[in-house]
Length: 286
Image 1 (tube, helix red, strand yellow):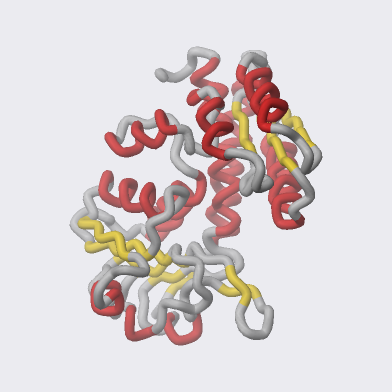
Image 2 (cartoon, rainbow, N blue to C red):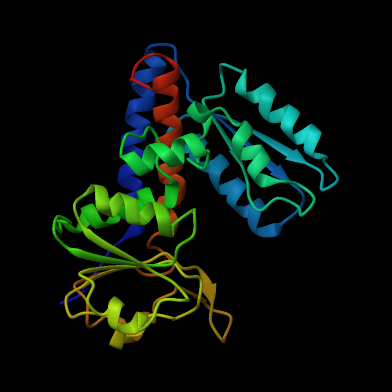
C-alpha cells in the first residue's frame, strides 16, 4: 500500500532539532542571525519572505528584512550585501529571487561571503557540493533527501531519475543522490524517450515545472516518487509535476502537493543558518 510522505511532519522534526541546538548556542552567547533581502513588490516573493521571518522566530533566530524598492540600483544592492558580509550578528544572507530585470542576480550571489551563503548558490559552495565536501546544501534538494531518509528506504544501489536540470534543484539533487550511492540519471526536455527512462527509476524526483507531467505509465511499481513541482492545474488548483491521482497507487511512497517538499525548503534554510552560525563561531570546521 502506498504511503504518503508527510512533509509537514518531517519539517517539524527538522525545526525542533534546530530549535534545540539554537537554545544550546544561546547558552554560549551565540544567536544565529538571518538577513533576507527583497527587491520590489513581487507577491510570491513577499509570501516567501514572510514565511522565512516566521520560521526564524519559531526556531529562536535573530532576523532582519531589507525590503528595497524596485528602483534599487545594482550598486546599492551590492553595497548592502558587502555591509552584511561584515556584520558579525548576521550568520546567513539570502537574496530573494527573482530580482527585477535590471539587476544581475549572479553578481549579487557572487558577492555573498560563501560562509554566509545559506542558499548554497555561490560558485564556491556549488563546487563543494560537486566534490562532496560541503558546508551547506541548496534548501530544496536537502529537504528532498530528508524526506527520502524519512521513508527508511536505503538509497545505495538504487536507480534514481531526476526530471529537470535546473541549477537550484535538478543538478544538486542528482549530486546528493550520487553521494549516497544511487545510480543517477538526469532527464530534461531534450531527453529521448523520457517516459521509458523514468519508468525504470526506483527513486523518481520530478522538478520540471509542468503541471501533472508525470503520469502512471512513467512510474515503476513500488518506486519512491518525490514531487518538487508547484503549479496550478486547469481549475487553478495547486498541484505538482506529478499526476498524483493516477500515480499514487503505483508507488511505495509519494509526496503530496501541497504538504510535501514545500514545507521542507524553509526548514532546511533554518538548518543552513544554524550551521553557518556554528562555523563562524569556531564550533565546526569550515
